[in-house]
Length: 101
Image 1 (tube, rainbow, N blue to C red):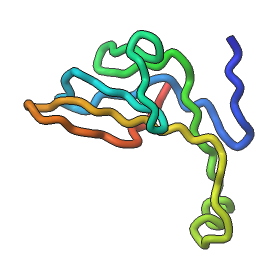
Image 2: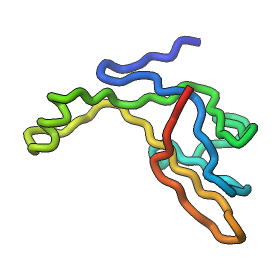
Image 3: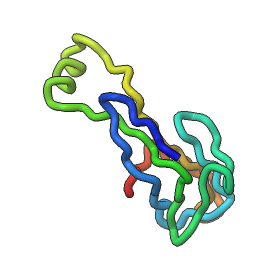
Image 4: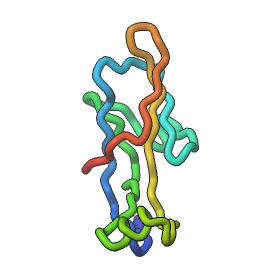
């Protein structure tokens, strides 16, 4: 199965490390859309492993400077991973977790 990567983006990877002390139940979101365990990802060895590669935006120096100056924004594909989990009996949320291969 071929995964199409849009221009200006790159395949960042399939893995996200669970925060230290994170315990189930987990609720995993990509761009705010809840993912289904078993269908979209599984949890193994302290990681969330997605069944497809997640895509992140490439931002070079010139593009970053233009966005910083407010000249224009960006509309490239950039997937973010958020995780809701339990730690020491409390529900917590970790946002924009790093994705790696």
